[in-house]
Length: 188
Image 1 (spheres, one colour):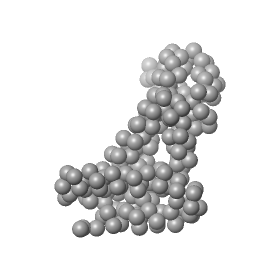
Image 2: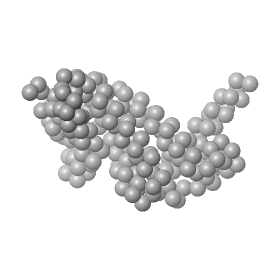
Image 3: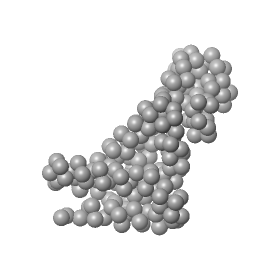
Image 4: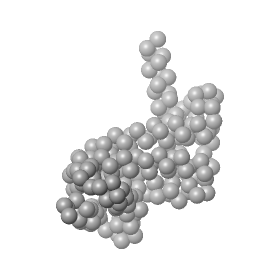
């Protein structure tokens, strides 16, 4: 009985991984359940039986992948700007280009808005946690403004501007981000 449950769980993970991989390779309108099934090594019926529809599959895959992102970003040390930026850069170096494509496509494919919104929530929660020591003492108005500043500076578009548009090396982009964040972490 346990072996069957373990096999079912592994099958589910293979399907979700296949969906995530295909999602990053092409626009979601070009993803078919058949493609996911073939990549996962299962039948289309298995995918349909498990997830019901492409929308449900993509939502489940986004949630599953999001848990991995949260775990990766969770390694960022609270209150340690260089350490947190290093973790953030690890994430963006792996996923940044993909996330930028996702954000550009959400305008054309409304179903992607939910995925992008969850990503924004994860990013906001990460900034609240990592920069908590610099937010706690502020008044509510100051805290809201300061959090918005942390969110903006740590956004994937800032990474894109530094790494892709300005052509900075990872090390230089990381240093630039630490330099931009540092004034926000000083007592005023």
